[in-house]
Length: 221
Image 1 (cartoon, rainbow, N blue to C red):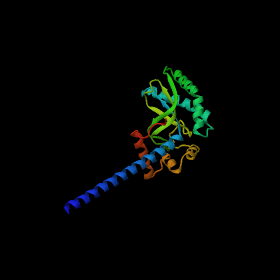
Image 2: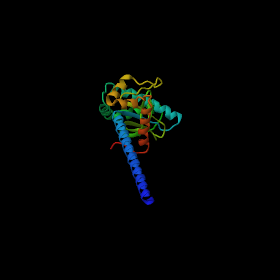
Image 3: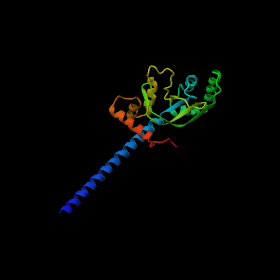
Image 4: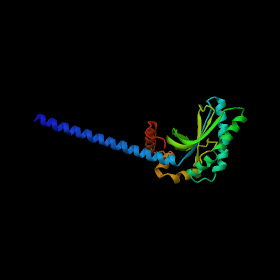
């Protein structure tokens, strides 16, 4: 009798463990699917500008901002009326050499001889706040400008939707830019990007970051 009871209990324990494992697996797969979908949708709606300084010296960091200002001024003349990420990327690609020459001109005028490389690609970014907009960690298409050794702190902004503006002290992104982003995202994704003060939204941002930081969400092929 005891043996039979032991077998029954053992089977119950096994079944419970199996059910718990299946539940965990379902939750993990659902979480991954959610994070992957949301991350992909946000990444697809954004084209970034990324400037890397030669080093973290005060002079090199100041030079980085000089280059940044010149690039933004030029970029704003090109992308003022852009209505889609694809259009912004096409314009940036066709003027890639111009961006390089502008950066080199600024560097030379400041008395430096650093080389400059400019490329458009899909790069890994940590979570970044820009005014009252936050982009979760992920792999984003970007125009990347490297100054010299490109070992210093970097600076970034968003070319599309147009979030690039030199003075970010106000901490407010123009409503026109937000509206363009809103058109590309669903309501929940937009809530994530605009840092809605909601515990559920904050948890979902953390979920996306966890998968990215553990290399479970990777760059686009």
